[in-house]
Image 1 (tube, rainbow, N blue to C red):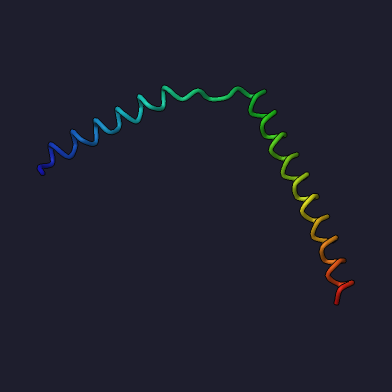
Image 2: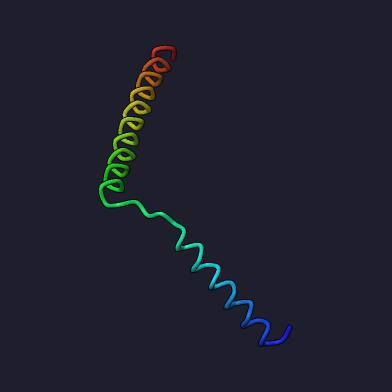
Length: 65
């Protein structure tokens, strides 16, 4: 493959990349904030649930031992 073909392929790839980036719909600030808060709250709630279950199971295992 010659250098001219490599550069042409790279140009086409870059143009395709630019075209694909134009098709992305980026969220606005309000949506991004709301989704970030939602993910954070869900992660905290699941963490508390898992920690509680872990303590209950550990307590039950300690009683059996």
